[in-house]
Amino acid sequence: PVWAIGTGRAASGEVANRVLAEIIRPALAGLFDTPTAQQIRILYGGSVTAANAQEFFGQPEIDGALVGGA
Image (cartoon, rainbow, N blue to C red; front, side):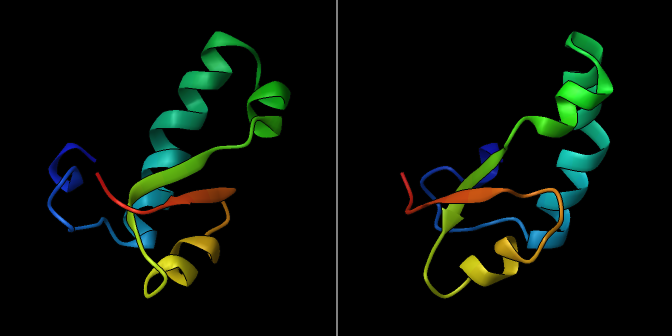
């Protein structure tokens, strides 16, 4: 999220997952098709640290993460 850039703040895993499920995947399905959208791997990259990484990795729509911050 924009508000996480350079702040050290991160969205919760639940919020990030909901954004992927309700906004990103449907947008990809509109560009391609639903089966293709489901095959595309999406990485989350909003202030993920060793301390909070597991919260993101446990979400069904998050396929990985970019650990670190801007």
